[in-house]
Image 1 (cartoon, rainbow, N blue to C red):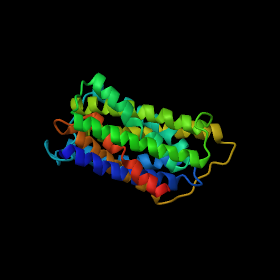
Image 2: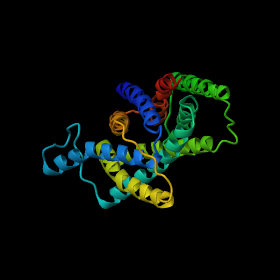
Image 3: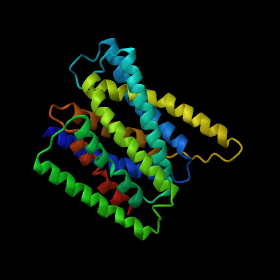
Length: 269
């Protein structure tokens, strides 16, 4: 199953992405880091849109971005807002929580995605696939027990709540991805949502700056910031590719993809 291998490769890169995020947020405010990483991702995909429109990339090629109508643009713009909201919550949580806590919470997203895939898309999995998902989720739960050693109260810590909300939004986004990819194509979805993330995050950055203009706005440049956008773009490319493969199950893909917790757990240990 090529789609499952693509999901595993995406998971590895997501783990690296989590480590880069944590490193970039040390001594930095969240919104500048988010904005620069979004700009980096958009710059990677803007040429594919332009070259496809100019005819240099042909239909059927790996990076071809098909033309879409205004309704499709609105659907993708909504995904950008959804992703930005999830990221903002997750970035604040990651800034204030150890990776050994934040990543396992984030990794519980496949459970909600799986339920949505079964009830909304009618996905059916065999016994072996259910067993694999159960074992994977069990390991995610065991990782989360590490939080007790960090002395964090899960019920009273607002950063835990931020990560839980980010996880739920991430699950909704994953289900929405399945709908969009089937309807519009993987490259149209990823290329345009990467572009639309920039104005969405620019608005968020401006609002944040307005609310904090009388206080210090901590920011220092580090090369890990653009690497966030590059790593995530490649991880998402593999993810969307896996969803476009006939027979791909979003419930299984999301579970495999959140195996990124293994990489980030080791990197944050």
